[in-house]
Length: 239
Ligand SMILES: *Cc1c(COP(=O)(O)O)cnc(C)c1O
Image (cartoon, rainbow, N blue to C red):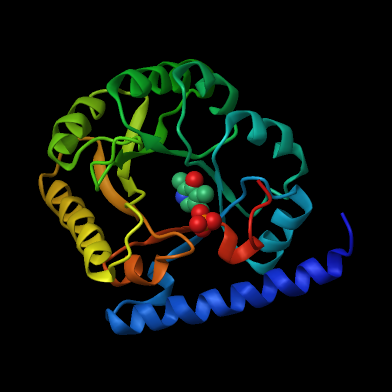
């Protein structure tokens, strides 16, 4: 790693700007900044640079790939952070990450949930927190379930003793038109509120995870309380 001090200045100054934007979005939607949590998405970023975001005060790390998490895990300064898995997760990879994360945000099938349930009970001895991933734009290329199926899946997953459903997550389609994007975020928020009101056993709608580097302002405006930023913090990804 070349000059760590330069990286620190860059990352700190980007985070300053991000917090200003977050504050503006909160003001606009009459919310408190303290209600919105910032996650640093670490894919392709060296652990030393991830640790700079932690040093700044970021409390959540988001991991996309099981193998990458395993190889970087020991080098993170983990005392002050929660690590969440946010990428597409194959059932046979759950065992690699189950003891390294405090939440799996990308659950989109009963089959995957059953494997998390099994390993949480056997290996952790306590339930794993999860979010259900919604494919809010119904894009064929994306994982996640449709908005229509969400309540059914949440209800099924909620029966598993090794899982606690804590909310919803999405990656909306890339939208040229801000009004379209805002509509997707608004639909997510509605779903989040509706399911919360059903008071399903073992389900609490605590986290609405949406908003990335290009759209977090609008996500906050529509109720996101966990935003996931990669390039806005660390700069353009190499890969
Ligand atoms: C990469 C990624 C992000 C962050 O993307 P940026 O545009 O770099 O902020 C957020 N969420 C998920 C699930 C990702 O894979």
